[in-house]
Length: 123
Image (cartoon, rainbow, N blue to C red; front, side, top):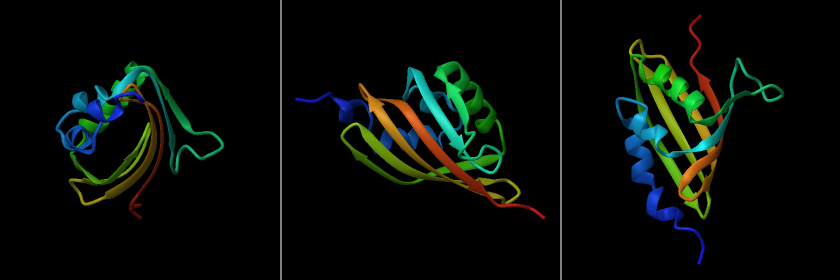
């Protein structure tokens, strides 16, 4: 048999993490040595922003969850040791953000994540 990935990582656990009021529940889903590559307007594909390890991920989540915004898990598909999900966010002023992530799981936790995000531009 394979690893017990499904026993610790599932859509509802991810939903609670994303839609919570702090990043703590979400942070608990990452391995100690996890890596996130972020591609967006500021960090383009040839030079993505890379976060290494839970301390750097925690700092990013603390920043995100300190903002006046809501987070919603839109869709999630889990297959073996991989998952993909869509997350929508909205700032208090109505600016919207959409993020798509592809993740690799190890022992039921996120070991690698590629996140592509886009947000409304205020002119």
